[in-house]
Amino acid sequence: MTSTLPAPAAPAAPVGDAAPGGTAAGGTAAAGAGGTVRVGTDRPAGAVADPMTIGRYQVWPPVELAPMAGITNRSFRKLCREFGAGLYVCEMVTTMALVERNPKTMDMVRFGPQESPRSLQLYGVDPDVVRRSVELIVEDDLADHIDLNFGCPVPKVTRRGGGSALPYKRKLFESIVSQAVTAAAPANIPVTVKMRIGIDPEHITYLDAGRIAEGCGAAAVALHGRTALQHYSGTADWSAIARLKETVTSVPVLGNGDIFSAQDALNMMARTGCDGVVVGRGCQGRPWLFAELAAAFDGRPSPTPPTLREVAAIMRRHAELLCEELGPARGIRDLRKHISWYLRGFVVGSTARLDLGMVDSLDDLDRMIDQLDLTQPYPTDAEGPRGRAGSPQSKVALPHGWLTDPDELAVPEGAEIGTSGG
Image (cartoon, rainbow, N blue to C red; front, side):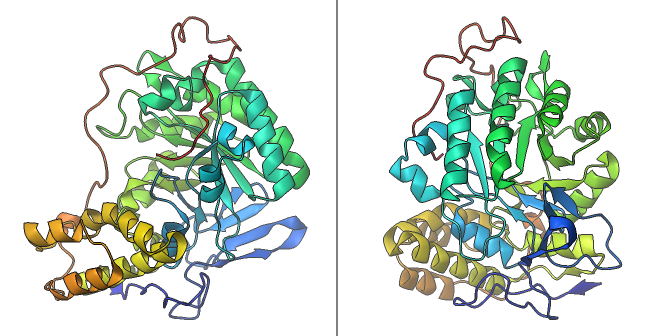
């Protein structure tokens, strides 16, 4: 049994407006007893999980949008929120760039007027710089939730000792998390940690890192079930998430990796006991996944998958939001990377796909959409893994001598990055 997929809001409608049935699709934040802030929709009696607690925020459904460079800007977060509530995290920004008020970085720290809580992910290697960046966030009221990135596997990050390379240095990791938590405390801003299993099979770090983060006062820990060496290849190891849940007992553990459907999310929580799911590549070109997730966690029937006509309308809505946020020229260029994800599995033709990938205006987009066979139902070929996967790395790029002493506290020379963005 299925229900109708909620359409994205009309262009002028703010996030959180009533969806069909009278419930806000994107939800709202509301204060509860004891200082608790409820985020999203009300948990129904037939729900199949508990709310996800991040500090003072109680989030329903227990879903988080993973920060993705070049993807999770304000427009994409708003579009996803129009389908379902959850915690929506901004693109990662670097702590040094934030401290130096780099214009590009400050431009990335954009939140809509109804985004609450405002979730921001930070990347940093130097504990002092991380502390200063969090102090700036507090002083300038830039965010309500801070997530620390210890999961990025890309070479330009790991070769500086950052991302998924950093938890190997236990003392350095502990100092960064502790400094961030302490600096955020005066504003009651929860600090969470996102990480991977480790660098490679010989250098597994997640259990130590989870215990350390918990001891430092992190509000939650999230684990992507792959090593840095795997990058996004192969299959995520959900059993590692289960082991982390057994190890970290006083704060929520969130699971990440290979959630490409609502059933995947339910399966992960059943198999691992995790307290919430973090969705990344699975929503690329499929923001309505958050409507499916909301229905699954509520215990409601799954929405009917969209036809090409409905997908085109969602894509058009995405384009409008990007043009409003970034300006017409930059916004429509930003849409291009999403086109192939939206059209996956549909019979469109190579020429039309190529033309849509070079679209340069909203009028151009409308003209091209009108030429498609919009009556097509959602194809089964569109299901399954999305986004980059590729092959595992032959070797993880690391600073010279990085693996010599896991208790070394020294920050690698040139570790901090002065710009943000993928």
